[in-house]
Image 1 (cartoon, one colour):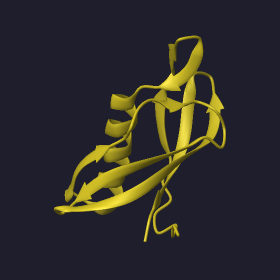
Image 2 (image 1 turned 45 degrees about the horizontal axis):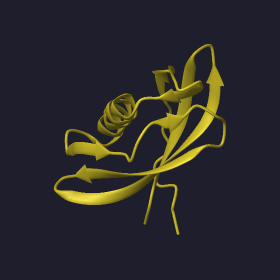
Image 3 (image 1 turned 120 degrees about the horizontal axis):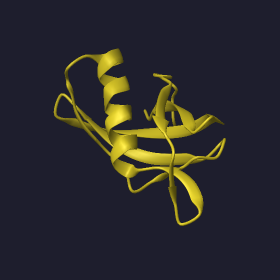
Image 4 (image 1 turned 90 degrees about the horizontal axis):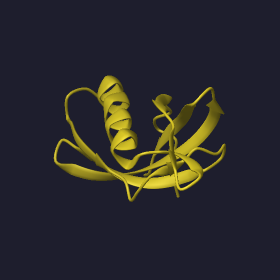
Length: 94
């Protein structure tokens, strides 16, 4: 069960790969880490995701964030795709 303790919006340029629009794994991780750091402070050490994020509304991806030495599960959900920009929310798992 996931609890929406944290709802954040992040934006990153879309990259076209293999004919499909996506945000690269490294961009997803860095933009998500930046947003978590902005909300939670400097305790956010890293964010790890399993691959590129498809730039399609309602697309989700489960990632892991390390905050103050503790790993927490997060789910990214794409909320908007427009003008080569994808926006997503970050939900923190309980």
